[in-house]
Image (cartoon, rainbow, N blue to C red):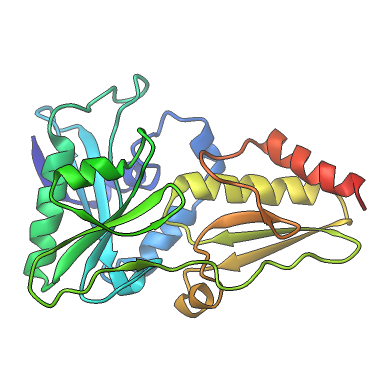
Length: 260
């Protein structure tokens, strides 16, 4: 096993989080590729873990925290770390030390770039991006919001703990219409899938539905709202957890239409 920087031949696999086999990924659009093109010049770093056969089995992406959806300074922030764990496609490659190798490589890279520490986010529930996994590797909690913990590992004295950026203003509804407001950053295909499905569902529901897209790759826009990604229907969040199906989003919009 070895860890390498992202190279052009592996970009397409990276853009779909190593899940080229997934039918859901067909709904993600090209948002991650566009996001990558913007952020590669803003300090984004991507490393991949290859198995003995040269297959890409895991990935980690991180960037200066000042460019992320978390408040902090002089740290790098891990957007996600993922080792392919499905039977489909390249198969389950978890349990071979790829995650630990990717994390160690990213920490060393951040140190060489002058970072005073590394931050990450994790969930309190026992599935993807577990906060407990980071704690086992020397991270400690800095902040918490619902089931999401913000964790960090300082490298130097004087490092300042990060904190979550929380929603800063309400998402307005539109009188006499159903409003679908979609915040899109692009870094996460799962969020991009929900965005594209919500956009399609809103367009299919006729003139009584107003769709608004808010691009949060612009830092000023993100700071205004404090929301990096998300779909809101009449001002209420519609997507916590895995991507919602197109049928589910149509149903949610339809319920609001009946109340007009």
